[in-house]
Image (tube, rainbow, N blue to C red; front, side, top):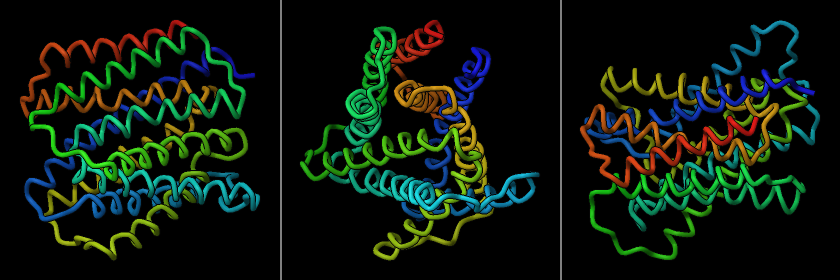
Length: 296
């Protein structure tokens, strides 16, 4: 049985990972502004840079047998790679049909709801009143934040776009749930190595239908290196480690720190105004975290 201190440490690991993911939008925005890239290319390089890092660290870690994995668990890790690719591809594909705001709302908000439903119905995981209240606060805060950051008019929303965004949420939720199954049996490096290597291969396959952009200025390559090392390799390492003592429901709620971080960075670097709704959304997200901390 893990101690309370271990639980709090793992909670901070998930927060650190989510905050790191919140920097992805700023880095992507900088690359988009000065190069003819596309979302699939950026997603591929994130995974392709992270996978060798997981392999290198795994080989250097004493006593870790990297590929000593049961066939069933190897299948789950490969499925995680597929879920990661599904999340990246479907989210990118949904934006032209629904716009960034609706795609982000569906992808981010549906994922924790799916995790809660699966955990309650299939895994028989008890959902306390405090956790439910934190979930409601986090979802409302995310909606307010995303809507507050939307400056464009609402595009014509198609059913296909909503479906693609929902499939993206399914991929994200599936990644969390599958990862939770393996936390007690394998080192996070093993899980992420297989998942991200297989995910990179799948994304490479998807780029055949578009175009894999390989030409970037030096500073853009440095940003790509940052994306692969920090918000991917390091963040997902912390994320997988943090799931050791936390339920899938709590993990899915804490990951909603990502839009909060993105909004704050956009305010600092791009002077995007949050407004009353944005500030209220930020406070609700912070409140949901305090509820989860108090619950421990």
